[in-house]
Amino acid sequence: MLKDSVGIVQTKYFTFENLVLENGQSLQQVTIAYETYGTLNEKKNNAILITHAFTGDAHCAGYHEGDKKPGWWDTMIGPGKAFDTNKYFVIASNVLGGCAGTTGPASKNPATGIEYGTDFPAITISDMVKAQKKLVEFFGIEKLFSVAGGSMGGMQVLQWTMDYPEFIYSAIPIAATLRSTPQQIAFNEVGRQSIMGDVAWKKGHYYGGNEPDKGLAVARMLGHITYMSDYSMQKKFPVKSPEPNENFDFNADFEVEEYLRYRGSSFVKRFDANSYLYLSKAIDYFDVQKDNFLPEEKHLDIKFLVISFKSDWLYPPYQSENIVKYIKMKNQEVTYCNIYSTYGHDAFLLEVKDETRLVSNFLDKLYNEVFGSEK
Amino acid sequence: MKNKNILLSHLKIAGIVTEKAKVLDLGCGDGDLMYLLEQNKKVNAQGVEISEDAIYKCVEKGLCVMHSDIDGALDSYLDNTFDFVILSDSLQQVKRIDEVLKQCLRISKNVIVSFPNFAHISLRFNLFFGGRAPVTKCLPSKWNDTPNIRFLSIKDFEIFCKERNYKIIEKAFITNSKYCHILPNLFAQQAIFVITK
Image 1 (cartoon, rainbow over the protein chains, first blue to last red):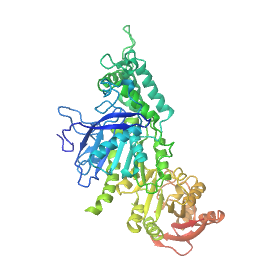
Image 2: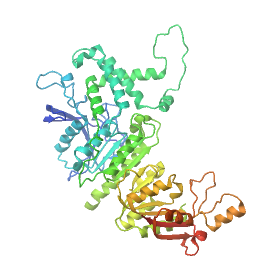
Image 3: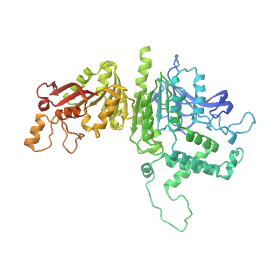
Image 4: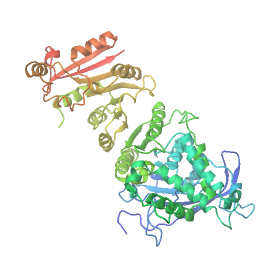
């Protein structure tokens, strides 16, 4: 095992009763899948919550027993890394409505004993954050040192600053936006139509039978395109023009077609189609700008690090600049960097070196402020 | 290497800025001035910088900095947010000078500008006898790769302020890393002004 890895980790589960949702409905029982890395200090003030993107999960660092691939943000979390587990206690959880251990549409409804399917209530980013707060409180934490995440994870970060501003010292929204734009909603809608148009979907009650794999795979293919960039696709798939021949049959002639098909078919093995529908809707509904982002509070004091990527056309830099603008209006401290990258939206998972320079120095400064006087 | 006049201008600015003031540094570069102000005057400083490399250097110093051009960074601030807005060696690189200074004076009580004097005797000499765009120790870039887009003199700036009714409340001039007191428009290489409405 590498010495900068958190090593072998396990997903754990936390269950609580009765979560009242934003739309007024409630969930009788909620289970949250989570992982933690590092050690919670005595004062319980060194905890950082990592929030995941659309199709992520709680496993963001280290290795599960027997796995060759580490968690999805292992490059950023570990001893001496950006989120330094020698200093911080890192918590990651699977979002409400997800399908990697946390209660979602594929979970069994305790009232009926069968899967919720589309009887699952509509959930929002705010509901996800509410559930995360229960988990954080379960550890006895009264204030998070930081909340950080990219894409939908960035939306959760922003929601934390809206809903529980007194509960966090700092916030790191990456490749995020204050509200979903028509273009973002449009892509999500095509994904949803693809799933709902699959005959196997059966209005969401497909569990135990054939699942809408074809529809979900196509949704994922479309998603993947939006996560890359024109340049990164050209780099990844240098065009080799295939010769037309008599066996022409609409097979994957180009590398990019093959790649997307592979991505689509491997995705359906790990992701639930209904979760895709619910989570994409939660993203679409996200809008903290309408509430005039950041609460009107006299003692509001959150340090922000906002990061965007130059080639990200799904969550373009201007949307992060807009976040910065609102933070400035509320007189909060903010550091912002638009990182030069050609990877598109995926950059938040790939531009490790630059992100590390920003995140580790930003957190270090805060660490000295918070813990400096205690030493 | 940093021009020595700039180092002295930083010290001068640190002398002007008051303890614990709220400061916005426009075109803060690597953050040397903000760092000096935070250390010496315990200010609350926020920087604006266009170069990504410089952003990392600022963050490494523990500074608060925003990746943006100066023109686009000002309109969202509320009136009188700051005690001092500083344009240290960046005024000559600003596109919309009038608009930027107007915004600076809206969001801050005081605006400190520091810029190279393009009417310094060596530049006049260079241009007059050499017949070429001046290149000096203080202004080392040739015409084709200079970041400067405004070439102003001390006299120009004073007339500019007078025309707009901006009050000059303090000024200082520097030559060869010493203060210059005689005929600044001819002999000063660097000028520092504090202006207010």
